[in-house]
Image (tube, rainbow, N blue to C red):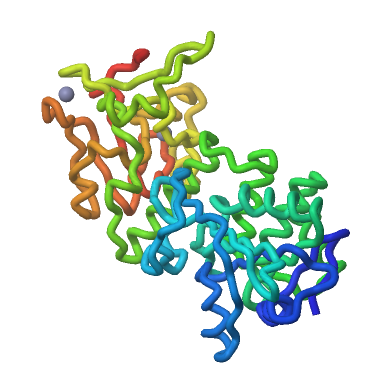
Length: 364
Ligand SMILES: [Zn+2]
Ligand SMILES: [Zn+2]
């Protein structure tokens, strides 16, 4: 039986969802399925003989492209979801007995490395809307981790609760909920970003880079579709960013010192706090004795950026290598998927580093 969390909001497992799809429900009108595949056939794979009618409403892909003609192959298994891919974000369909239920499905595995954040906005909006029109069941396989993570985020956003308070509150309804540690970390980021997923936030950027690093470590090919647009290529760049910056200051750009080609924008920079990081503690002890060069010791000699489409060496799959200007081939910096230590002591992992001495800062 699904557990009631709030008025018109239930949490459950795959069995609860199957029961409602099969027999209908006097109460539940909407289902949010969070499973490794969005396809309704997941249910028949789980229990042979279970088949439910569906009628597609739409499929939405990361990046906004939409269409109803995706092949089964494109649905994937929810892996490697990240901001820049053309992966499926969710599907929406009428489903179950008499096609009376509205089912939204997002592809998400219960793994710590899964990118939960990128699905939160669409899931929480769906829950909101469904509760206004009827009642919604949020379910995953066991009803313990994925569905609980999404409902936790929902309670955080709607009731402005901290991650801990939201889980505690959810446990009042369903005591065994337990989002995995990776989801808990991401929910904490969601809290720090003000209960929204802000792609421009340094918190999100660091997270996104970490996701890429984990994909790389798992041996997945990180092709340029996962990279940021090349700010030096107007064609690639204009559609998203050339919108006139209304009254605000113009975008800060980093150019190759030698040929003046734009190699990064401020929005590509992944900030770090000088002197912070995994191994910086020892470094502080070593250098901390001298009170006179405090500002020097936190000076960063480099900026770190997200991987960008001009970084051909990165695309070829190397673990580390030089970053050279695509126009004049001047050496600009270095990349290393295992990380690079900034001169301030912070470790950036993975790292795409541009030496401040090799680039000029200006406006576009
Ligand atoms: Zn630094
Ligand atoms: Zn150059």
